[in-house]
Image (cartoon, rainbow, N blue to C red; front, side, top):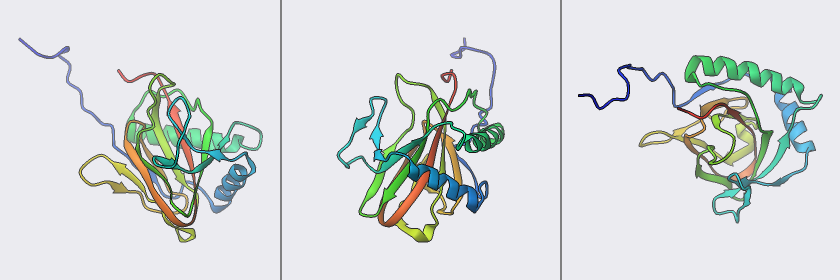
Length: 195
């Protein structure tokens, strides 16, 4: 008698995270920042219902980058980067970016985002998350991106242009920014539900 549903044996080749250090030029990073700052800034929210928060869980500002002639280059670059990294490290069945890109602003004085996942119940199936570090680490203090997959969190290196990839169900957060401003770009890639 077997307790398995199938006789097949599979090897899990999915990584908990991956990153690319130099995927973006300084000029491209500045174009993303300029584009993000040119759009309407609004408070960061949580969940599929876009709940406003009092700052206990999340304190940040965001703007949303949609496909336009000014941003088409960015979406094209992201598609190439996502295809490469997914094929190398995650092997997820992906369809594309079904949501706008989130340009996030963490200002000194405690802007943060406590531990959370990007997976949203009863919404589009987010499968892969990306965070692009846009600010020079000398421009702010705090603001560490932490990924939690074991006893100790992985602190992603604060390097301008660093792009971190992780499954959207991965617990992560951003520690309080105590001084300066941290800009980042957050992308969610969707696909059929995991099965």
